Amino acid sequence: MDKTLSPQEFLAKVLEPAKKTDHICWSCKYLKPVLKDSNFPPADLIGYCKKIHWPFYWCISEYDVVKRCYAYEARG
Image 1: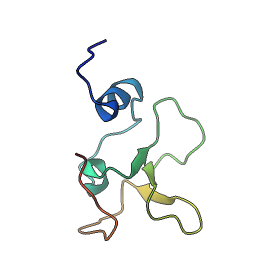
Image 2 (image 1 turned 120 degrees about the horizontal axis):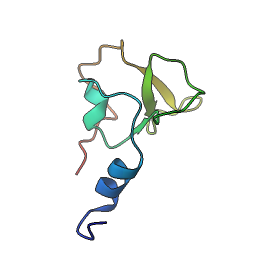
Image 3 (image 1 turned 135 degrees about the horizontal axis):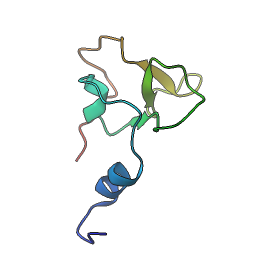
């Protein structure tokens, strides 16, 4: 394994998401993607927001059209 990877880059290689879309949340550091071969979540979910947490993580569907989000922060 390459030792020059940041922790975020390492996790991106190890934890493979089930889907990849052009949804704005993919470039946000608070996205917790649904992992490949996960059987629990509904099929249309791409992940969860770890910042918008009322009452729990906010579910993000691939069909949601989000232009802006107050919790958005670009991955660094």
